[in-house]
Image (cartoon, rainbow, N blue to C red; front, side):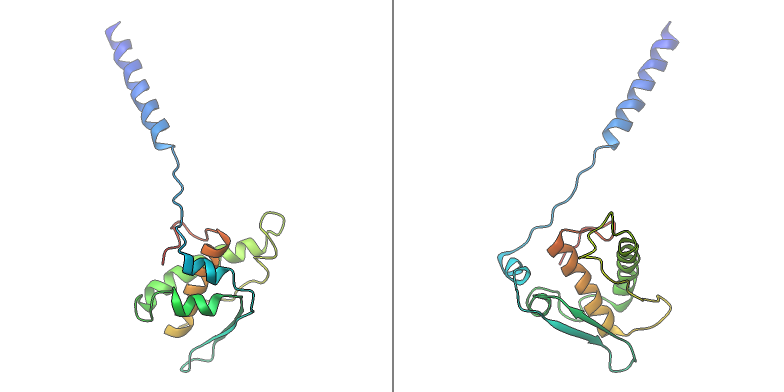
Length: 152
């Protein structure tokens, strides 16, 4: 009888551990008033992302992004190029997957796929602006393109 009690106690303990580990907490992103004003911009910004030393460029047309980039985003050289390349690869993969699923994800947000090859050195400037665009995009539209909270 004692062995059965211990076994049941062990099962209850493991069940409790499993139940408590299943709790999910979704971390929220706090948005400052200055950032909200960037998100509310109606004027269209056209940003050309290019690196003088490479032949690659990206054109982003997004109201408020240029203002956000100049006033909210971390300054250049805050992140290393390899850090941004790693994050950009995750962001691009998830973004492109959503482009292919218009019934599941808003096709107005996910319009065109991004051709980003992790084996190509796009340079610091392209990676910096692309990384910051993804942070801006996630924060403005309350999206999550990776396993981490899009922080500034």
